[in-house]
Structure formats: structure tokens, C-alpha cells
Length: 354
Image (cartoon, rainbow, N blue to C red; front, side):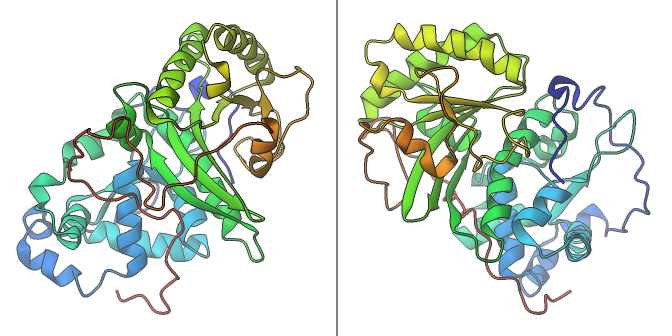
């Protein structure tokens, strides 16, 4: 089930240290064993292609819940829980469960040391140069940004879930995290994510801004000037899709965004559309007919994700990059980093080794 989005700003109230899990905690070897060269070598014969892909997704997107992991990589919850338990025991992933006053949150997973070492060795990078820090990853359990990260990730994992259904006609071709966006465009603007969706012979790319209802609308609207600058710098016009928590919040945001758009020198370089959690039955299904352009009528039709280009029929999109790599300036130095993982998982292993 998708995350419930009522009262988004209180979704993770009173975030506290990791709660006592309701089930018995799997036993793990001592840290000195999990960090040993011998342990890392033994893992080489046990990690499947899907395990390695999941490690890359956790490195890219920081934290995924057990439900999101089922959506993007497994056939069912039981198989996911069994494999994630094993990966936790091996020190490939770490897990925590945030506090909740009533009920319980799903388990949250982050990349652990053994998984990071495997990624680095696979990419030919010294683990020390990967930029991974266990304290930072495990510390996400206490981060005030945790709810925002998980909810924003849900927009994309829901697309992957849809694309994995039998007979699906769409696929998520690219998904970049806010961190990767920041490395490439952060001197101008840092979106909450970047995606590319293919459906029925069409392709749409977009930046996403995920509004949790706590940001000043003037600050949200102020980002449009930076998106205009990015379009002028790169020569690429990319729609900005803004998700808001409620219909009322969307209505208020649209007024602020329309004023900011009208104040731009080249508003045509910043196509903006909005939606809210109330605009479709599933609050986080980006593919649903939920997107409405800001500079159009308030009662205008809402377009599905694949139809977003129709909202601006005179807009000319640049050809998608075959490498998926875009930079704010052609001469900007590119740090050595892992390439963005494919959002779609490899085929399920027939018999994963345990």
C-alpha cells in the first residue's frame, strides 16, 4: 500500500532513536567480521545481480522502505523479507524502524558497509573514494528530512511498480536523486529528483519538486527563476512538475507560481505543472491524469504523465541524452562517481544463493 499522505508534515512525528522491533532481531556477526576482507570476498559468491542493483539504488536514493523495495524488485513481500533479512545479516544493508505514536512504520533500509565495498570494487573505485559514510547513512533514522526523502522516493517507486505489472505499456527510463541533481546543477538549482518516462512510443522528462506543506510558497515560487537560468545555460527546456499535499495547498501555490512565472524574462523556458495528493485516487501515482499547467485555466484538464508534453504543444524538447548525463556547463569538472542505476531491476534470480 502507498504511504498515507494525510497530514504530511506530521507523517514522522517525534522522530526518536530506533524503536525495539516487534520481531526478533536477526543475528549478525561482529562488526570486525563484517568489515573484514575475508567476509567481503565470501560475499562475491552470494550476491545476485538483483542484490547488487538494490545496493546501487540505496546508494543513489539513500533510503527505501520494505514496501518500496517490494514494489521495485520483488514478486512479493515474503520473498523480499527473506532476502532483505539475509542482506542485513551479511552487513550489506542496515535497517531501522522510525517511531510512530499509533501503529508502526515499515522497515527502512539503507546501504551498509559491505554493500558499499561491493559497489566500489565492482566499479573499480577505492572504497575510500566512493563518498560513503556509514554514520551518515545509519543516521538517516534521526534525520528531519527522512519523511521528505521517503515520500519523494515513493513518487518514483510507484512508477516502477506500475511498469513491472504484466502488460504494462510504460517504463521509467531514468531516476536521479536530489543528491545527483545537486552535483550536476546545484550551482543553479537542486530539484528533488529528475525522471524520464516512456509510454506508447512517447518520452517525457521532468524535474520534480515535492512540497511537504512546510515550505513558504514564496520560496517555492522563487525557484522558477533558477529553473529559467538553468534552461538558458543548458539550452534544454524541461518541465517542472510540482507535487503538493492537498487541493487547497495546490490552489494557493498556483497563484504564487503564476505570479513568479509572469515575472520571468522567458516564461516559455519554464513549463510548470502542479498536482496534489487529492487529484487522483492514488496520491503518489505520477502516471495518473493529475497534472495541470500553471499558466493555464484553473479548471483546465489534468494530463497523465505521458500526456504532459501536450500541455505545451509548441514546446520543443531536446533529444534525450543517450548517456543520461547532463551538465550545467560544458567545461564543468565531473567528479568520479557511480553512474545512475537503471530504475528497472534485473530479472529475478531463479534461485538466489543464501
